[in-house]
Image (tube, rainbow, N blue to C red; front, side, top):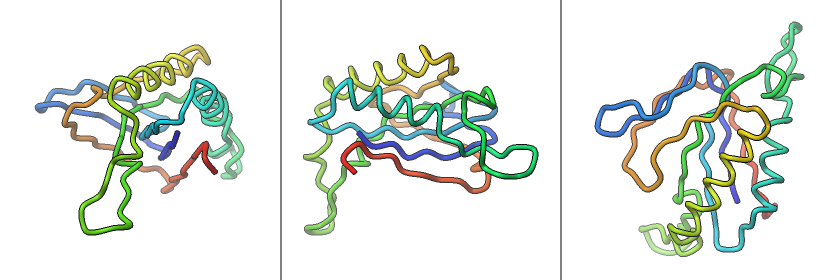
Length: 147
């Protein structure tokens, strides 16, 4: 499982110009799922994501977690995180989990975040979405259970 985490002042996802998910402050998270991923991978990433100290304290140091700042998450499923570009000019997505399998684990990931008392907004799995956000910092990190 792979996450691209971006600290955000605000974020919104639109489908056909309608906002379907929106946060005011927290993390914009792109979620990629591969065939080998399990609920244990999701649990690990939820613990890491919710406790990662990437928000600034009163001294301007990255010392506070998402939980401590009471931030929200805009979670968007992103199969292209497992795109393989080693051969040719067109990415191969054979490493991305099949849609039914990926959606089930993506939904569990979001539910686990909510169990940590984190407000979660989402896009729509498999939809063509437009995402707008203000990256704060900028701070962008990648978490990958394979590394």
